[in-house]
Image 1 (spheres, rainbow, N blue to C red):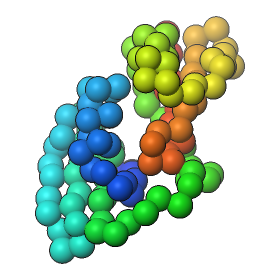
Image 2 (image 1 turned 90 degrees about the horizontal axis):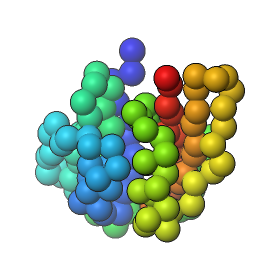
Image 3 (image 1 turned 60 degrees about the vertical axis):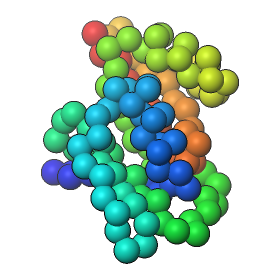
Length: 117
């Protein structure tokens, strides 16, 4: 069972604000650590962990890893992202009941938004 997915960030508050805005993920815990700060967000069992270490600099997109989130209304989420000029892939429909799309967040994380009816 996956406990959490960790994303390194240059700005922890920006990361928290973004995922609270888009997915309404609450902050479960937030800590100062010796090398910086970390926060856990989530409603379910698996959490999203952000780590902001002093002097961390992003090195481009994170290759080969995607974090997927189930959403109630994919079209609404796409409009929210487009409102902030965040590029979104075309919607894919592998079956009549499943739709999803992808985008890359400002930390370089590939994100999938997944709607199932």
